[in-house]
Length: 312
Image 1: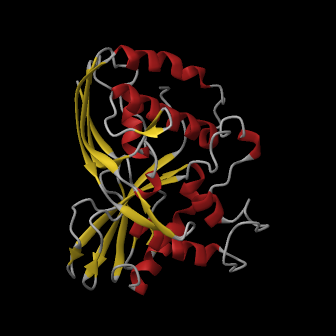
Image 2 (image 1 turned 90 degrees about the horizontal axis):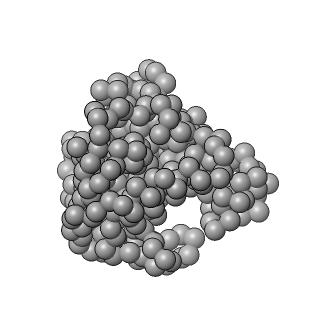
């Protein structure tokens, strides 16, 4: 990976203070995404139409660009297999598994803003504030602060005064100390990836690497202005093919969510666990570092595919 970011990336942590008993599902990604997204739309929509489809403002509306993210015509080649472009944000909910948060509890929501998502931070903040004030999605909370997740907790927004204190710091790729011959990934939210068109319940290192590099490629093209030619991935995929999957411990994580678009509950089962690989992984390591913030697989806007990485 080049020394500079392949696309702008601002990892943030929203600290919520619970104000009343907060009832939430074990996996909270769909609740938070759906909740603050509802208020984001109310803030951004100028027509107040029931549906976004066919709206003349789709190309400029902040809600459309962030949540609907329509396919952009000039990038049709890279997006020919997709109905929507990757969203310019990743939201990871509190992952402690609790279903009742008591008053006074602090709850962290990780929000990584990508490319144009960074300039819409005020909409994200106001959406969370409105969600917490309403109490309609689990209970009431207030947004205590927004801090950088990469700059030692520097405060970007103070919830008490409702003031921005600084621009959100961007992530920069760290330097690895020497060769990397082993990588361990510990998934803290469910992973959903497809291999040969089907969801993979026991992915190996090659499958995860392919999914990660495909996602990075789309983000590079859409939000970093990179060449859509995927040739840059070939030597990296070859490194993955030569690596050995030494451990792949997975367990099924079953959950579902209500889809407003489909009008029904949708199964979102994924896998949790640990994956370890060995080989010549030095060139791949920076992309897995990036993946710690952009996640891997599908459902990343609800926090799916978040992992922690250890390498040596």
